[in-house]
Each structure stands twice: as structure tokens, then as C-alpha cells.
Amino acid sequence: MTATCPISAFIITRDEEQRLPRTLEALSWVDEIVVVDSGSTDRTVEIAEAAGARVLHRDWTGYGPQKVFAEAACRHDWVLNVDADEVVTPALAREISGLFASGLPSPGGWRMPILTVYPGAEGPRPFAADFNELRLYHRSIAGYRDHPVYDRVETAAGAQVSQLMQPVWHFTVLGWAEFVEKENRHSSFLASNQTHRRSGLGARIFVEMPWTFLKFYLLRRHITGGWRGFFFALTAAYARTLRIAKMLEAQNDPDRQAPKSTQAGDERTDLR
Image (cartoon, rainbow, N blue to C red; front, side):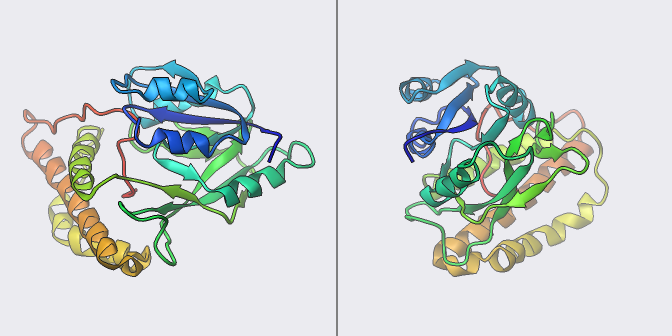
């Protein structure tokens, strides 16, 4: 692919110097890359600028607000959202480029598979089935909602959303210790951003761990990932249960709110 596609890719970042280079390299086929950074203290901004990205600063206020800001800063109406720990595979780049080979498509959107890559692995596990998300879209028919926790693309009534077959690879963490630490921080962020009292948490905490483990291990097919898949599903179950415990703590003791995560940017893993 010698010519670039008339697409703006946007990424939100904070301290992503280790994973960002691979993410940016995999976007060489788009016409513009916009990086919105929320205060990196490492070489993230330097790396992004060296790769030709347009870097903007915005103080962290949550996932949705960061992405709404980044989306609005894009020059093209066709936009592609990629997280700083994700890599657009060459096959997906070719598939998207094919959509624009004969000119701009009619305004619409495309979903694409997002597949987890375990620490130390070269690619996703066999038969991976993680997420399928709307990431490529025309801004006239879709856009991120302004929610600090549950960011997702919302579409206008009647908008045409199609399916891409090739995946994005998600290098969610660099090591297993980081995975556990990250989920502890993220569960605090989720618990501290609940805007209303949730009912049924006292009963739910008893079933959350076994249910989440089975969902990840069987339904999302981490069973094909060997010991890594088992540990991933186990940590996912622990993280979901920990979030409920922190929410219960905040509800039962209003003066002791769950600590807010001080991390910004790509703080989530694959536990959506």
C-alpha cells in the first residue's frame, strides 16, 4: 500500500513508550494520526511526534471525554480509533484499504474483531473470541459518547454498520504481575465513578467469580490458551469480584470512597 487512505486514526495515551511504536508503525497506511496525551512522563510524546503524529494534550477526565476530544480533532470525517496497546494487523489494513480503493464509501461504519495477545505470545490464541467493536466510522453517523467509564461509539438511527473480518491484536499487558496490578487500579476507577447506588451487589458478589471465570474461559475461548488462558480467566473473575467489593465498601461506608485511579489513558485491559 503506497498511497494512504483518507482516514484519521486517533489514539489516547499516557506513558505508553513501550507499546506505542508498534501501534504507530501499523498505521502507516492512514493519512493522519492524532494522539491525545494526558500527561506522559516517559517518551510517549516524543515517539508519537517522531512517527509523524499530531500530538495534543488534554488533562484526563475519563475515557469517553478523551476520545470525544480526539475524534473532534481529526481532519478527516472517516476516523479509526485504536488504543495505544493495539496493533492493526496487515490483513486488516489491506481489508480497510480495499474499502477506499474506488473512492470514499457512503457514510457508515465497520466493526472489527479485537483479539487478546497474552504476555510473551506472538499472536492470539487459537479460535480467540474476545470483542467485536465499531472502530471505523464516518463522523456524520457515529461518535463516541461522553462517558468517563463506559465509552462506546453510538450511531445515528438507520446508520449502516458492516463487519470486517480481519482483526486488531490487543497487547493488553506486558507481564502477568502488571495484569493483576492494572486490574486492581481499574477496579478502583470503576467503583469510584459509579454515579448511582447499585442494587443486588450483596448477592452478586457470591456468583460473580464463578460466572465470570466460565464466561471468559469457555464463551470467550480462553480454554484454548493453555495455562495463560486459565490464568487470564481467573484474573478476570478476581477483578470483577474486586470491583463489586469496592462498590459495596463505598455504599456501606460513604465517607470512605473507593480511591480514584490516578492513571490516565489506556488503563483498561480486556475485561470489558
